[in-house]
Every structure is written in structure tokens, then in C-alpha cells.
Amino acid sequence: MARDVGAALRGLPHGARGVVRQVRVSFVGCGGYIDLGEIAEASRVGGGVVWTAR
Image (cartoon, rainbow, N blue to C red):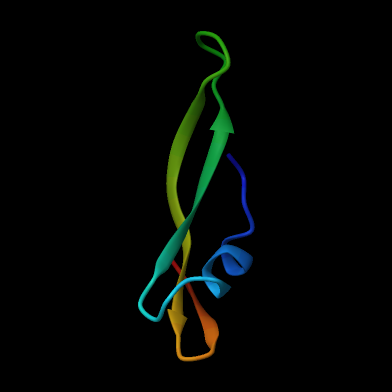
């Protein structure tokens, strides 16, 4: 399920984290995705969300 990571983290306590992964549609099989890995990470720090590119 796709979500806005930054918005989801704003409602969580300090130290929570979320990861954004890059995927592409697989042409083999039915409705699958190929995971191309993490591209960013967000952490809840103080009153905001800090993003780190991978």
C-alpha cells in the first residue's frame, strides 16, 4: 500500500522511521513487483521528520 511516509511519521513518537523503496513492475507472472532497493529513509526527530537519501 502506497503511503506518504512523512505524513505517517508525523503522528508517531520520536525515533519512528520509515523507508521508501524503488520498485518496478515485473513482466513475469501476474501483478508482481521487482524490489530495486531503498532510495530514502525518514526518521521522526523532535518535532519534525528528517530525510536521508540512500
